[in-house]
Length: 572
Image 1 (cartoon, rainbow, N blue to C red):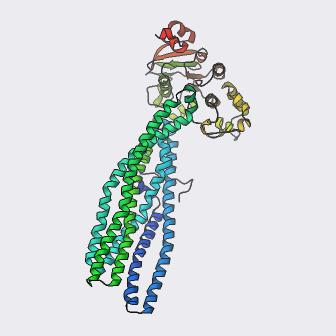
Image 2 (cartoon, rainbow, N blue to C red):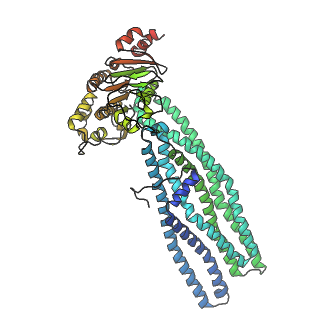
Image 3 (cartoon, rainbow, N blue to C red):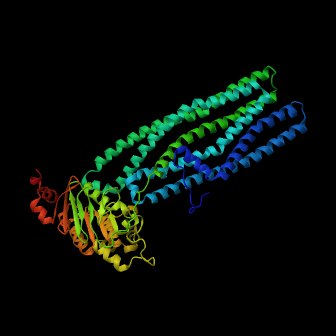
């Protein structure tokens, strides 16, 4: 089984079937062992009727008790050995499935790390959660075909060969009947793939909505929007349930046919063999053997149907994984170094320019427009933005990340202590965050009261996404983390939107002092923050409409005044 620190290899992302085959090729010895054990186990199941026929024809009918005892002992030995084989087969296939499970988890996690900040911009959180919770297990279960699936084919051919020695008619019926059963089930497997694909897609969307609700339920409740979102979630969950019923309906037909058709086939072959025995064409022992052979075939046929069902679901899941693995991070073709001196950032699409060493505020009636501008300036989306006149895409991406920090107000907060959440390397030796730097960042973000209010201060445990803190506290923690990084350029998206007026005024005042002499940009429509900015850039429909100080824009820009002062008469 794959080691936790072992390289999982390079997955084949050309399609769902190829990805499943890659998982098999990654463990060739175990896969071959599973196929051999499964084949031997099923063939020995077919050997039981053969030994019973010999015991009847050569021991019981003629009354030869030594021969009967010998054949009975052979039956016991084969049965005991087959029981051991069954244990080994199951153990080997469990390892095959677990290897596929862990290997898929590793490549998915590795891809998430590789995408980095581009992950949230390329796919939804619900998609990743759905892959981790459901698709990985479904893919692993599909590899059952490696063992019992191959064994079923070998057992089928073995039984057909044994039946040839008994009756050509019976052999022909078995050779033609079993494939006919598989063909009858085939259309249902195709329908299952389509229904399962739609179900998985809806499940991913709903999972993403659950994550959004979990993170913003408190805010929604405060705004009175909880019932509205709950109604939308209810409608989506009803659609998912309806699609789940469709999947269940097809699945029930597949499973019913997988059991019913082989049983019906067993009855037909047994009736035919009984007629041949009554006519004297076969012996009583051969009749017993035929019944046993066909009874044994029920197992392989059921495995075929089950493997077809698991493969159909596995391919759907593998396609989702492959789609995720095909995502590419932001391409880095940069060959130039970042500017040696603090320099201006310019976004031609909006006309925004951030002057070095100044606190600049971007205000717009549509917050998404200003956030998009910062995305382009931080090179998280392709753009024609420049830094010191040099196109951003010509500068090495690691250097951009080293000098420019985009602080998203919804950035992830991982579970741990408060100190670990703010400064992961606090007290870790070289490069560790000093106590004074941490205290200064907490003070600048007005977050020192959070540490003081918790029972163990910075050592107090905090839930994932800091859900045991209020929205305003989470926002100040994120701002503390950004200030502690002390980048040359800090781009903060709505850093005070969840704060009360008193705290917001303190943050605005302290932020300017903490970032003195360094380039800082914030997106906001709060007058308390705008009043502390050196320059305010007013955007309309994503384009720069006016610039100046907060007071200047209030005087000469009616639209700006309406936006930040909530002047209803002016807006009309």
